[in-house]
Image (tube, rainbow, N blue to C red):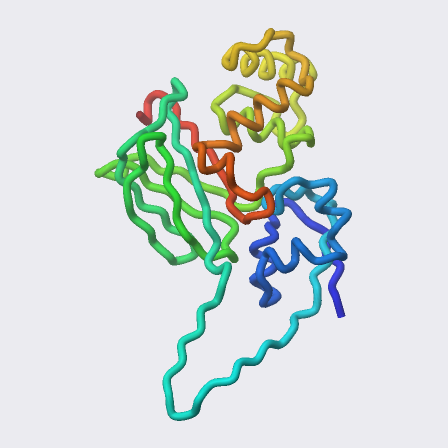
Length: 237
């Protein structure tokens, strides 16, 4: 029997699918989730209260010759995550050695020219730790599944903070605090700093935060490729 699941803060479709032995795309593309897809443009940007129908897992069989070794590949696991790291002046921390630890899995490498790192990690963990620099002096906590859609107030706040724009007040900033933060962002991207969250500002916020490279712009919105930003204060450059 299919399962009706109500999304909570920190949930991700990749994690839910893994827990139920399914591919994330199988859950997302199921006909029972058509209404959810119509409201949410991407499977990795769900919001608390959204309802996901987890379909029944279907068995699959394959004919194989006996007395031989056969190798099967599981698609869609692990999950793919992409993170861009910027300094206090919004400049990418390029060509920096890093170590990413997620659920006991450790990945090492160097950020690219845009300060981006891309790795495959387990789908179940809700967070990981990123160390940057040869001496690993910079440590960043990375949350998976915590980004809300840009058309939700919480998604706007998250993106502004991820881009290093001061926004006090936790999950409930005042109207004045929100207007100042929005005006700061508008000034940064060349829009009229009116402090009002209009359609052009939302579009610019989504572009600045969610699209890192030309490759990201071409990714199918249904693909489970979360894009995160880590903003570092000037003393951590």
